[in-house]
Image (cartoon, rainbow, N blue to C red; front, side):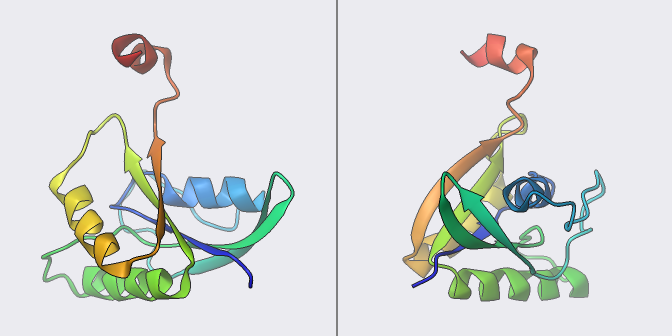
Length: 131
């Protein structure tokens, strides 16, 4: 069985950047503006000699009436259904938000293997503050 990893999280935590690192590509568009990724993006990755498929998803937003965000939520849910493993990505600078907690609720229902990824901790000021 082939492993499929879905990268999931709220908007602007770095999901597409991680996807590009895994796939060694620039396939996913990255931007400071929220909502750039709307559909699922698929790629192949090799991590320490283990090949797997990876799915980039848009930022999960719960409780919004925006039609685009509703469609993005559907795409995220489809990716979760397809995946064997979920990489739940959070932003260390922003801390845990209400949106992160909404994603956690969704992921707990999935009963999938879950890996927590903490992004945006790559600067000296953050490291000195918390380490």
